[in-house]
Amino acid sequence: MKMIILERTKMFMTLSVFLLLIINKSLALENGLARTPPMGWLAWERFRCNTDCENDPDNCISDQLFRTMADLVVAEGYADVGYEYINIDDCWMEKNRAGNGNVVPDRKRFPYGLKSLSDYIHMKGLKFGIYGDYGNYTCAGYPGILGYMKNDAASFASWNVDYVKLDGCYADPSDMDQGYPEFGVHLNQTGRPMIYSCSWPVYQIYAGIKPNFSSIISHCNLWRNYNDIQDSWASLESIIDYYGDNQDDIISHAGPGHWNDPDMLIVGNFGLSYEQSKTQMALWAILAAPLLMSVDLRTIRPEYKAILQNKKIIAVDQDPLGIQGRRIYKHKGIEIWARPITPVHQTYYSYAIAFLNRRTDGTPSDVSVTLKELGLQYPKGYRVEDLYEDVNYGILTPETKIKVKVNPSGVVILRCNVEREQFFTRSHVLSPFLPLNPAFNVRDNTFE
Image (tube, rainbow, N blue to C red):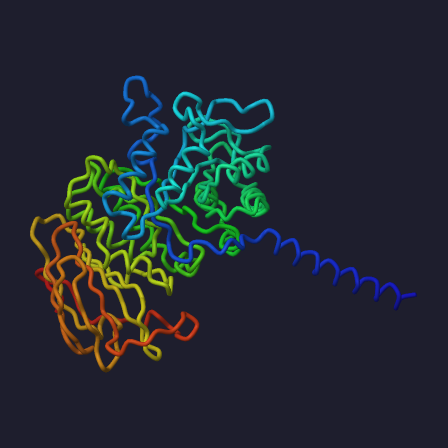
């Protein structure tokens, strides 16, 4: 009798494990998307929740605004360098759902419906993104998805949505470990491939809950883990600090198909200087961040447009290895950030290196350091170029000292390619960040 009970117990345990595996597999994202960080245009930071189309028709959240931005993304060359998503954020809905439970676009501001807008964006060769909220309401008070997950997933699929951002206002953060994956299941079951952007971890962090990143990685293509970006240098600095101070906890979560999201690019708006705008673009590339512009493309100045369309920096951001970079030095307002990138030869990575000057003393700082001190030790050297100034330094060996001049609140970003170009996948190489114990100090604006 005991043997029978034991055997039945084993069978039950085996069946339980098997069912758990099936359940976990069914909950997994499995959409094959976002193999590099998504790029596109997002309305929120620049246009917020402006619904006053009567008095401000050119800037309100409306069909006209998104068609206009789609036109400009193509006509002004943004699509040519990789920007492809046109994403609606909050405030696109009616305040109440339809009688059948479906969410309804605002009838006055989106008179043709979202399928028509989606078709227009797709006709341009672009992709269409939309916003929802895992809560009773969105952050601006419009209908959330709670109780209507299947309805909303089906509506998004019927509108041929390519990208879903799910916020977390008016929700219990302790429910998110179940709720975000559940909505992902509904998205998958539609059969429509849709990037899934989650605000899951940031709301749990606010609530003092430690996010389960193993689950988040399995169910989301990207996620927010810090504050919304605002149109200011102070806001940008706070995000840079967060990603540097917490890098040991978050870098390992990034990779092809799943990315940490430090929020939108605010380049070309009102709050950043030219140098600060260059800094955001360079640091976002080091962080393997999604590049989602939130700017009025009708009025952006040429010098800011050039930052957003810098192909060499975009190539760093879109590097196929998908390794997020890290801060490797911080002292007296000078920071150095490094990201392993292709090409790779044997066990040696190429690198993007960003020198950041956060001083406010009003004069550029000279930073001088050998490649070896930065952890670049390939004996045959690296081909080094400045990605903003188009300066080619030629081939430099690890013992070579390189000197750059970094403007206040500005950046210099270099690409250092191993000289023998041979590509490997991420699994072929180990230890992208070599042990670093720099023997240099800041003194009179110079590393010595």
